[in-house]
Image (cartoon, rainbow, N blue to C red):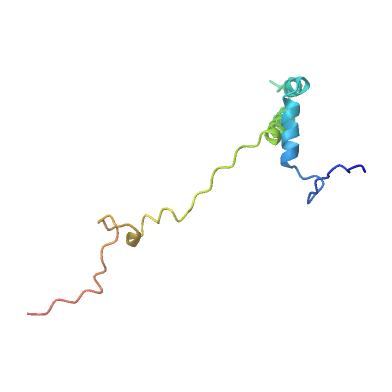
Amino acid sequence: MQCKPRMEILANEDEWTSVDEQRLAEFLNTATGRRFIPTLVRNIPQLLAGGETNAIMIRAGEVRAFSTMVEAILLLAHPPAELPRFNSDAYPPLEDDTKWDDGNKLTPPSTTDAVPPKPQ
């Protein structure tokens, strides 16, 4: 009896997974992969030093798009680590005197609740 290969079920066929991330990182660590990004970067179009303004703007857009694509490939292989989430209730609001027992008060006690002095 032959076992069928396992298939990962995704919500969408084009969804990027951690397996894809790992395989791309492994590819980039091969001899071919180590030449892949530098070869792409060598083919980035040169910025135009002069000429028609429209042509300069188009070329600048091409260079930016090319750079963004190379960065996206690297981020797909090595995404930034997620920052640890912290409990937002760990530190009470600085303005809430009832939460801080440090002897200092930001808001003075209300004088409207005080008993008015007796006339003499």
